[in-house]
Structure formats: structure tokens, C-alpha cells
Image 1 (cartoon, rainbow, N blue to C red):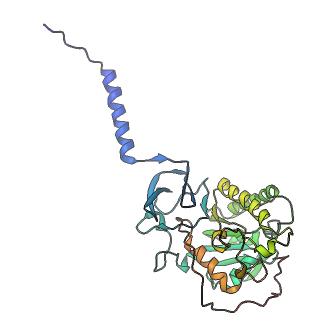
Image 2 (cartoon, rainbow, N blue to C red; image 1 turned 120 degrees about the vertical axis):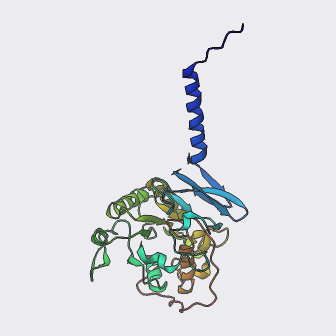
Amino acid sequence: MKKKRKECPYFIMVVQTSLIFACVYLITGNAIITKTDTTENMEVVHGISEEITPITISGNQTVSVSQNASGSGGDVSGNGRDVSGNGSWDVSGNAAGQDIPWDESGKKADVSYLDDVLFIGDSRTCTLQQYAGWDNAAFYVKNGLTIWNVFEARIAECEGELVTVEEALSKEKFGKIYIMLGINELGRGTPDTFAEEFAKVVKRLKELQPDAVIVMEAIMHVTETKDAEETYINNAEIDARNEKLKELAEAEGAYWLDVNPVTDEKEKGSLVEEYSFDGVHLKVKYIDVWKDFILSNPFPGVYMGQAPQESNTPSVKDPPAENPGISPENP
């Protein structure tokens, strides 16, 4: 007569528990991704995500973009997003782009996207304010503005009067803040000390506007002719400082937006000569290049990066060769 094998209840319980956990993991599909994928010259930074949404990239390639639980856009806390390539993403039907008001083409954000946007910058952004036609956006801009005087500058209109940027940010509320500063700082300090001071500005912005998305814009290059003058305004120094700013964006959980790939001469790393009247500032008819780039790369959202087409029918004439109030040495 065969003996009946004795089964261990504890062993069976452990096996059953392991199977249950395995099934739950497969069903939820939650994952932690902390890597950088490079696809067609695009760097996509992924962070901790509660849900991973596949985004189709031109060329039939797929990457995963972290999305928060509500499905209302990318989770950028602690993780920078790099927009500095020349690819394009198809976001139609993807939840990651639902918080962006797209125009009829589906390739650019509608102008209403700017309703809660604040631009902070020097004379380069002054030109954007003057000629972009974006009356629904706010601009705290001034010729010669720097990271050292940005909060003390009395350039912000608030409740019918001009107040300091610090005071305005303590009263107003913005959804997205774009900041481009750095051309006026080239002759002072080093890339490291510049980044240290810029970090103070970003931290203060986050304190004053805790709910806003911070978009750090790369310093735009100067033309090859301007670079050849061998002054402190040169592209090697701009590149060194941009690299530090990019690292800062990653560290502070800000977005990184680099317009240079669409404003540079191909493979030269310098601003297109035709685009500028002084080697530093864009001509009015090429403001559309910058405008299209911003609207083609809305935040929070997903990278599109489609280089805009050059406008053949400028709506306004170029400024005179000598623009009073804006000089190459004091933008």
C-alpha cells in the first residue's frame, strides 16, 4: 500500500502569493524608466512614471514618454525634458498631448496656448514681444536685462502700473514661464558661475510660481561674422554656457528648449547671416522662425521639433540697420 505524500501548506501559500504578485505586475504594466534614448538626433529624457504611453515617431520608431496618472501631460518633477533636435512626433490620439490646444494642422499649438504664458528676457525677447503679435501672452522684458537684475527690474505691468518682476510674480499666476537670458552676461564670470546664478533665478521662480512649468531657453547663437570679431560675444562661450544651462534644467526639473537647430547655418553652429541685421538680433521677417518653433514645441506636452519653413511673405518690413535702443554690445 502506497504512502500518501504529505503536502506543506506554507509552501503552497508562498507559491500562490508569488503567482498573484506576478499577475498584478503584468496587468498594471507600471514601470520605472530612468534612461535616455537617442532617436534621429533627439534626446528624450524619461523619468519615474505611473503610466507609459507609446508615442509614434517618424520612421516607424517608438519610444515611451512618461505620463502622469491623470493623463494630462508629462510628469516633469525632477526630470528635465530636452527639445533640441530636428525630428517630429505624431501626437494625434495620444493622451500626452491632450492638455495642448492644437491648431487645425495638429502640428502646432494654437495661439490660445499662450494665454497663461510669461516670457522673461532681454532685447532678443523684446523683439518677440514687439513683432510676434502675441497680445495674449505676458512679457517681462528689457534691453540689457540679466540674471543679476531680473527680479529688481521695474518692467512688469500689474494692476495698471509698472512694478518689479519679483512683485508681479508674487501677485500674478502663470501656467508656463519661458526664460531666455545670457547674451548680456557673456563678458562676466565663467559658465560655472553663470549657471550658479541662473540656478538662483530658477529656484526663485519656482518659489514665486510653484504651479508653473519652467521652460529654460538656450542662448541663441550669433552669426559667423559676429563670432569672427573675437570679442566676448562668441559662439564657443555660448555653447559652454548652454551646456551648463541644459544640466541645470535637468537638475531643477525644468524643460530645455533650444532654438539653435532651426536658426543656425547647417553644420556651422552659428546664426544664419541673413536672419540678423547686427549678428545678434533677428530681423523682423525671421521672427516667424522663432514663433513657429515655440508653437511647434508646446509644454507641458511632447516633442514635435519640426523645423519651420522660411516665410516668403513677411508682414512687416525689416528694422533699420541701426536700431535705436538695441545694440549688439548691449542687447
